[in-house]
Length: 173
Image (cartoon, rainbow, N blue to C red; front, side, top):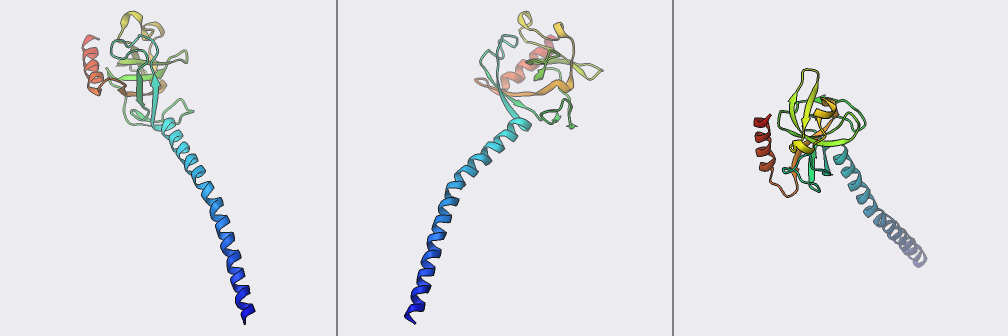
């Protein structure tokens, strides 16, 4: 009978050792899974919902200065897949005065103010700094499906500044 108890104890000790080893393996995988999960979530947010872009150039000066970080809402006007040119679903159009980020007809990324929407599904993009802005006066109307998103915030500026600037720009058009 002593022998049976010893073999049971030995078997339990072996199982405990295996469980500890398996727990160590799982424990080392948990942080890696957490990091991969966070990376995947951040990638989805950047691709579908929001993006942060840094401004280069003076076309929106003085409202948006070079080096300003912009928070761009990619779902402000609809839902689009990152690799497609059109919207999957569209729930609104840009309004005159909205600051938008878009692809120019030459494929460059630009930030300008929407001056007006044309009847052909395009918009007129104008920079606030009219003297040094390469905008629709140079390349014509921009198709609405070229819009990446609407500027929701700019670093160092309260949202009221963008809204007040929008109202002033609309009155100057």
